[in-house]
Picture 1 (cartoon, rainbow, N blue to C red):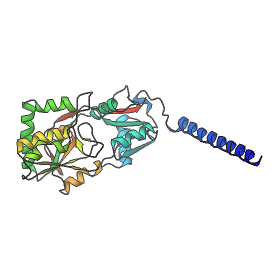
Picture 2 (cartoon, rainbow, N blue to C red; picture 1 turned 180 degrees about the vertical axis):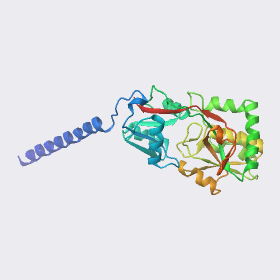
Picture 3 (cartoon, rainbow, N blue to C red; picture 1 turned 60 degrees about the vertical axis):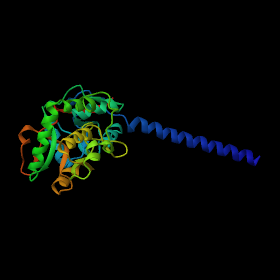
Picture 4 (cartoon, one colour; picture 1 turned 135 degrees about the horizontal axis):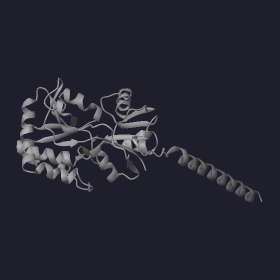
Length: 286
């Protein structure tokens, strides 16, 4: 009799715990992951915006995007990686995330549950992605420009863009471990290139933490033409510029610049561009 009573009590306790646990899960589902149904940029007033961390602090980024969008934001949050930004969007920590158009296309084709706003960025932010170097690296800048011109002329650059960037099939990989220039010119002075994975598929880091795709394929072609070994250094996006200035790398691979800064700047110089971004794209949950 006592054993039967204990069994009944045990079963009742388990049922109560199950109901409590289920209730919490249902509550979390209802309040934790749903975002406002946003259809256009005009609806982002007083919402939370986020993006990949750069050198600009969050409060300055908030002011910048409020100026670009012409409306007040509740807050701005910067995240270390693209994945963290997407997870924050899906978890409703932010309701809208900004990316370059090329990265937004990549995410829309590789991550489920995302949608681009049907109203595009009201301003034109055309940028050329190029390599940034220190001002004392004019010789290397000129060498890179020479081979970039060759790759544009012979169609190799466009072929790489078609394969790794302007596509809906991002299954093609080109890991650093397969670079031909590295195996041929191991005794030559390496060119150290900083990458962060902050602008996929132009600058892409795979799940093992290895650079792959367009950046590796392009720098391999450049290394072959220059007859020099190329080595990649993976670093956080916000540290890219400081690592360049301190000499940890010779160049930053994926650096956006306007035409007015293509030639020189007080702190850095740029190569010619290898890919053009036309605008920012804003993503929300479906």
